[in-house]
Length: 391
Image (cartoon, rainbow, N blue to C red):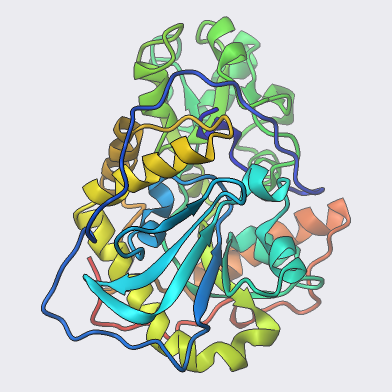
C-alpha cells in the first residue's frame, strides 16, 4: 500500500483502512556511510541521554521522516518483525556516544495514536505527535513538543484539473461539487474535515468519509470526485504509478485553508520533560542538524528508507522515486522550512493557539474534551533549539 492509508488525528478515535499494493518497490540498499560529513566538533550525548534514544513514528518509513533515518550511522540493525531499525546515533558523520532506535507506527502499533503508544511503552523517548492530537489528548495523555520536524503539514485535498479547470482552492472545489454532485472522500472522523465543514469551506453534503486508502473510487469517478492525500506522495503516485489514472492532479494544502497544525512534532511525555531536559539540550540541536542535512542531501538516506520498506514487507509500497519527489515537494511547498525566522524546528504561539481554538470544540463535541484552560505553553517548548541551525 502507498501512503494513502496514513493515520490521521481523529475526532472519535483512530480509523485507518489498509490500502492495496499498487506497484512493486524499487530495490535499495542501506547507506554504507552517513550521508553528511562535516568538520564540526562531535556531540557527546552519553551520560545525559538514554543509552538508546527510542523514537516512535506514526507510519512506515518515508521521506517525511527522513531526518530520523539521517541519524543512523553505518550498518544499522534492522528488525523486520518489530518494524524497527537501530544503530549508533550519528551527527554530521560522527557518533554521539549513544544509540538510536526508530520504530514504525501505523500498522506496526495497531494504528494507535503515538501518544497512546508512548504512555503504554515508557521506553519510548520521543514520538511524533501532531498538534491537534496533542490538543485532543491533552487531558488524558499529555505530551510536550520539543522540535517541529516540518513547519507545515503536507495533508491536502486533491482534484482533477481537467474536470475542474477553474478550481484553485478547496472552497472552489466545494462549490463545484455542489453543482456537479461529486464528493470529497476522506478517512471518517478526521479532525481537519470537521474544521473544513464547520468553516464553510467544504459543505458537509459534498463530503464522504468512506475513503479506504485505495485509488479505486477516485479512478472510477473519472475526475468527478475529490480526495484527501499528502502533497509529498499522491501527486507523483497518481500520475506515475497508478496506471488507471496516469495524469496530474491539483491540490490545496489543508494548512492553507486555515488549519495550521505542526505535523509529527517530536514530543515527550509531559511528565518526563524535566527529567529529559539535560538530554534534550544536546539532542534537539542534533535533530535540527539532521533535518537540514537530510533535505540538503537525501540520496543515501532515501536508499535506506526504501531498504527498510522492503525488509519490513508489510504491504507498504514506497520507492526511491516517491521518496525523491517527497523531498522536492517539502522544499517547493515550504513544508520543510525555517518558518518566519532563520532557524529550523520552532513553534509559533499564535499558530498553536489557533489550533487550540479551532479543535477544542471539535474534540469536545466528539467526547474527547481537551484539558481545561489549555494554553500553547502546555503543548510545546522552544527552549532546546539552537538558533544557529537552519536551512
